[in-house]
Image (cartoon, rainbow, N blue to C red; front, side, top):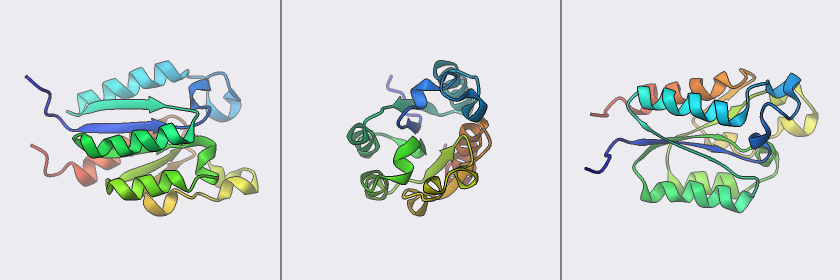
Length: 153
């Protein structure tokens, strides 16, 4: 029997695969695989199917967002990494799929270098979670379920 549960997409951008290695004082010591495992379990426990993806390539991220059009998706949790501050294609893709998206940042970009204060994706997201470490991913999932999963069977 085909799984009819809605998916929650979690999309990670550039350098997120280096969690636990890259600047642990800023991004924490938990590795990417461990985070994905915990997050998958968390999403499944709430009755949804996790779909977690990471790429260092902007076009691949756009393709992944667009694939939500062919999937049964409740919403998207997205941490574009550095593409937050440079990409126009990623917010365009989010707008095109018309699904609720929550922007997540492990650190607080507004408390860091000035160039990180600009987010091109924030205007097309329904919420932003920043500066809460990897816990921000779980907060974003909870937000999507609370706000958009109300009419789920």
